[in-house]
Image 1 (cartoon, one colour):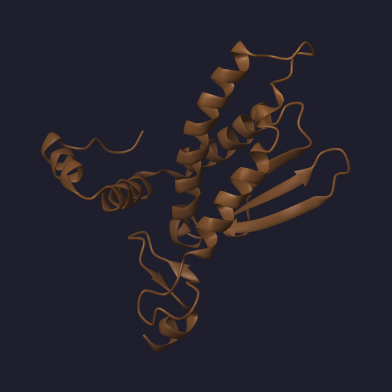
Image 2 (image 1 turned 120 degrees about the vertical axis):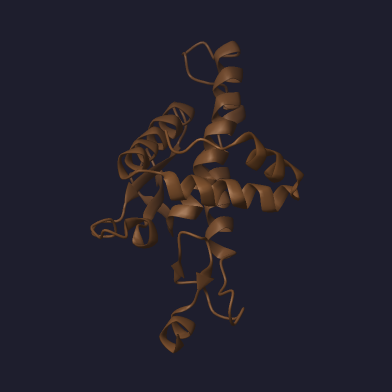
Length: 181
């Protein structure tokens, strides 16, 4: 999957501050991600969140926004819709749109957290076979992370507008600055 990192490059990344190293890793990962791998991650995230949400009232659903992936430059324009749904009523409680960079961040966060939650719940299942209620608000917590990821993007030129376009290098620009350029 993707390109291999040389040992020397990995040593340099390990010496960077944690936030910068994470950013470099995410940019590299998004650059080498194929379209098929991307769709596989969307499907995997749906599977993982469904397993964690088994027996819970709320569930997250991820889907590629129709038409956002039809360009040859799909990495720049693709958008992933994250929707929080109340399973008993079928009502959509919240919905956010993410770009590829934000989606990869969320994918890493959720898959690593879910592994721990699923491992813990397999050792402490309720009599009805559902995970314990300790994970009952997992969908809401993850939706909070989606909100945090999508709210913090601001234009790196004017530092004023909300970033509408994020390039594969992860630089963010508002439409006003793009129009001037």
